[in-house]
Amino acid sequence: MPPREQDRHTIHSGAPHPSPPPSTTFQSIDPSTALPLCTIHTSPQSSILAAIASAKSALSAWSLTPPSARARILRRAATLLRARNAALARIETLDTGRPFSETSTVDILSGADVLEYYAGLIASGGLDGENIPLRPGSAAVHTSKHPLGVCAAIGAWNYPIQIALWKSAPCLAAGNTLVYKPSEFTPLHAEYLADIYAEAGLPAGVLNVVYGGGAVGAALVAHRDVAKVSFTGQISTGRTVAGAASGALKSVTMELGGKSALIVLPDADVAQAVDGAMMANFYSSGQVCTNGTRVFVPAAIKAEFEACLVERMRFIRPGDLFAPETNYGPVSSKTHYDKVVGYIRWGVERDKARVLCGGLGRLEGVPLALRDGYWVRPTVFTDCRDEMRIVREEIFGPVMTILSYETVEEAVSRANDTETGLAAGVFGRDLNECQRIVGLLEAGITWINTWGESPAEMAVGGWKQSGLGVENGRKGLEAWTRNKSTLVEMGGTVPTVFAKL
Ligand code: NAD
Picture: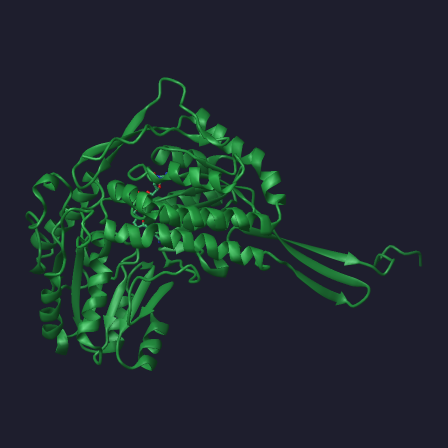
């Protein structure tokens, strides 16, 4: 059993501050054992206000710090993250239940990549404005970029430190200050991250952390000093948060859920397409927002695809989450376990979809010591129909649905028949045809002959109900700035209609 982490308290003004009594608490639970890891003190209103005030008082100095100096701090933080990768990955594995083979190769390192990317960008002119000679010699327009002010970031539970870094890196790079609320299900990383930023030289108050559930998030969103809300979570919560924030004309970035389509084209390399579908459904036990859970396969090659898939399913290896060969963990919480198993039950009993692999029941291969964890059998439903609930709603767990099709046009039209538009992808040998199909798919993140990679350079964000705005890439920095345009008249006279006739 891992040692308990020390209690977590609101972080503001550069240090954790225990909440005044009576404080309410909740537990962070290890999903592989269902045992508590840490007591978290919910931030009361007074602590939320203190965190916002701390961010506000640090704003002026931080926003006036030259980009090159801000970049040095971000780069140092990235170096510290890489040096502590193993320890931080261990925390993420305990908190999320995702295997160490994933957390130690993706979460912290991809977050450090984003810090380095934005440090490089702002140190090399990424925040430069424009100078337009309007009337050469007598009038010019300067357009400059400015931070938004105090920002709020609200995270989901699946990739906690990565989400925190994808939000904090561009936010701080652009000269804003931040109040961050991690998900109440996976909050452990936040204090480690705050410590790393502080050690890297981030001034006190630039990054603050509040803890709790929806009420704490809502209090942040509602505060008049918060200029922007960057949110990652479910579509339904996103609608509430975006409604509250944009009602007060705050900037928003919304990274929400999806029900993405993966289309296998008739000429695809079947083994390659199966590998893609496996990654798009079972990596992180299916708890990835961009999962390609609607897998469209030509009727003519469906049998071959399924045979290859059944073979590959044997390579899913639950087990001790710290063993290098383990590539499959439990889902993140009891609440989520009930939701995912509820969908599998619905698929079997109500949608009456055919179970190709998995289904209800106990997952084999789970060590005895982890039997109380939230393990779900990786499940493939086939012969699915578009109207089934398991095909229409985001399950956010290890559940693939296979849908067969006759013509590519039909597959595209069915793939687009959803209110979500986060991701999509195609597998095929003819790259021209793949690009043509991708061009027709209504999604903000698309892949050809691969699935899931999301490097720092790639601006990602959903279409339709899956989001507003983007994270990462050059465009991701813009989302944390506002413009000021100044027209300078140098001709010595003001154009006026009020001259003497
Ligand atoms: P959620 O919507 O339940 O919670 C997300 C966060 O919002 C939590 O921190 C929660 O405490 C907070 N919250 C809840 N109610 C709030 C309110 N009224 N005001 C302010 N904050 C509030 O989502 P979740 O279950 O934690 O995350 C899973 C979802 O996140 C899935 O739908 C997944 O697709 C999505 N997701 C999207 C992306 C992306 O980049 N598009 C990435 C990861 C996860």
